[in-house]
Picture 1 (cartoon, rainbow, N blue to C red):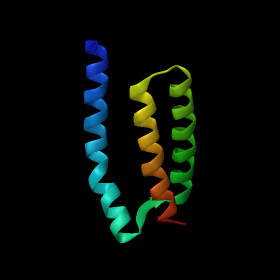
Picture 2 (cartoon, helix red, strand yellow; picture 1 turned 90 degrees about the horizontal axis):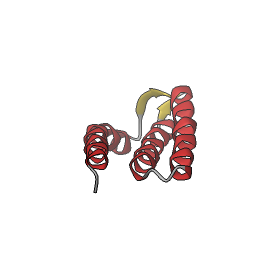
Picture 3 (cartoon, rainbow, N blue to C red; picture 1 turned 90 degrees about the vertical axis):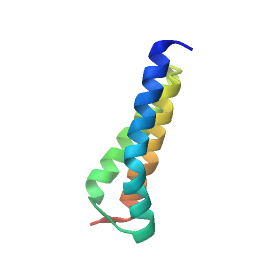
Length: 81
């Protein structure tokens, strides 16, 4: 495993840990304060970036963007109009 992979992995883990409290709150309350329009755009962008990361075979960015897609899609589902 290269040092660049480990740095990327560490960054991804830290970022995902930062999202966990917000995601848990959205799921529990079934409400997000993030506007649906923003969440929809973010979801689509994250999905496209996931597909791009898959195409270049980058495991870190594939996982990170897929998790970003899930988190933003939850915000979309429970977001304000």
